[in-house]
Length: 184
Image 1 (cartoon, rainbow, N blue to C red):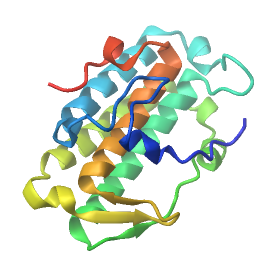
Image 2: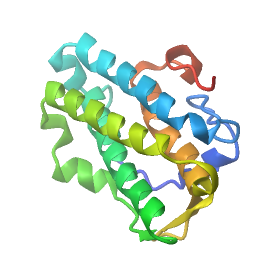
Image 3: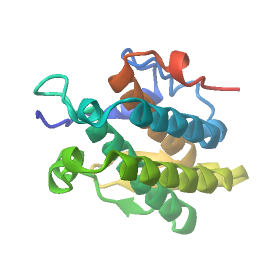
């Protein structure tokens, strides 16, 4: 696998040409509902495909459906931790995350799809509940990654929302609106 070292913060300024998610116009206040809808779509993908299919990489340089699902589960967990930091500390600094290193170390391709589905659902419920508590001036609280990327909770929510949506597109090829309606 070629490591993904792209800076994806541009999704806050314009629509993603691959999946169609538009972080510039997506209302951060709707992230809780979006996370739950995306998680449901992920659960359906994992349930509807045989184990050998979810484990198979479509090409040598592309993750399998299972590996993407593990990544999404871990993104949900990591961003919940970061959101908690932003809500409880002033301008916390959190380390950048090496998703490719995590995929290898945690053997994403060898994990049990049913367990991954359950963990993904639980992680989605937790972060959706935490985002649902954000109100008023809290949306402007800040945090910073170790690579210098700075976020408010509002921009953090929109940046975060792109990831599970985009990877759902990676495994099914449908544009974001064709799978998970965004916005009200």
